[in-house]
Image (tube, rainbow, N blue to C red; front, top):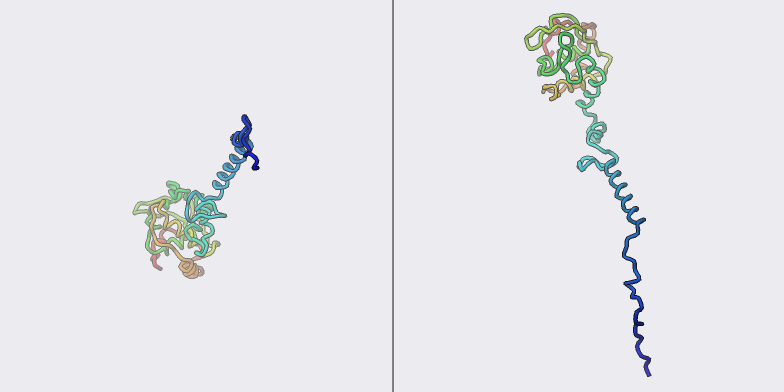
Length: 207
């Protein structure tokens, strides 16, 4: 004779009633800490959705210093050199000092198609009166010091930065180290000292 099927005891708690649906406080705290850590990690390493930025770089500006596969960027190299040397006289904005240091912004000297004059000025310096900018006399109270101790690459880079800087309203072509070397060799024995404005004006920019 078969035993009667077991029947649930009246009043006995069901399985579902034995489980506590409340999420433990410690689990909430752990999830919050994980979310916070993820946000901090993304903030430090995520590049803020810029497709060209990836770990270990955190911004597009940081990538400029590396130029993977493309070599150094002369414009950015020139920006660094300018910020360490030229800005002291010409200013961070390139406006110079009225009656003392000529401006680089929109200068007809800077924007000449050929850079022969500007290379000479940077190499040997400029001193004396008689400078004209856009046909108007400009009194220079401070001599431009020579930077011939800089390498051809550095001089080419800083001139390229000044000549091609849209913030300075300049759009002249870049300058190469080969152009700097050619002029350096040309004036080394014939003009070791600073140029005067009259001497520079007499120079053919393409020479």
